[in-house]
Length: 301
Image 1 (tube, helix red, strand yellow):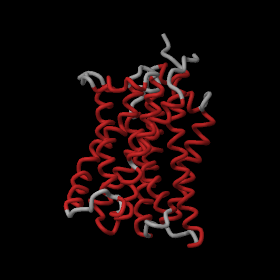
Image 2: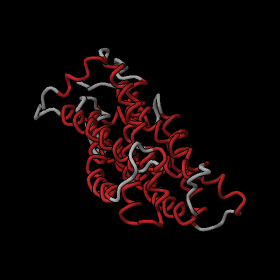
Image 3: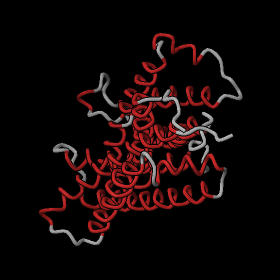
């Protein structure tokens, strides 16, 4: 049965951008803590990207609420049983700290004060703290839908899907920026490691989608009918073509070709950029399809 569409494109943009920021932050943190100077360009790009998508998405969310100037009321009290309350505080803390982390990675000439020796220590400290917030922010986008009472959104593993997709889009955004940059262009070994990481994440997404489909078939009638909107219903064309084929399978094949070194050097850069763009494209439509398809059907009584 056709449902009432309450959450529209602004919510989709928020779900996508929040996950992208979280993924870019984790990419930067991992590059700094595990790779050190060998992955400094990846760490820098992740830090420079992270604050802005979530800031844009949060702005869209506030506009969608209808009273953006009253957003401060979300932080007047912590509601122990409300996932929205926890999520709001996590988003606020993540955004503030990601701006601090962004500043620490700016070139010295752009900083108000000269970079003291402690900056490196602050970078590493935040790199240890931010992944926890990033996981909360990324998973919260799925929890928010999960708690909204629609049968598709209550399919098991939805928060996990959004978490893995967030990391994948974050990695893809860093690969894209680091590949297009003239100033801090990533080195070959940096791109290769990120490409391997993203290929693993894409495979996990495919496994999660398959598991969710099976779980829906074993669930309630409402969940079966709701998930059918993705598999062979109103949103099937978007799910199979935009998400599975263009957003997951094609970039995965491209990434595998890159990893195996089967691509001529002159085409390698274009393939890297293309696969990263498709991962971002697919990540956006994961949110779009699930948000809208979730509102297409209601509970069957």
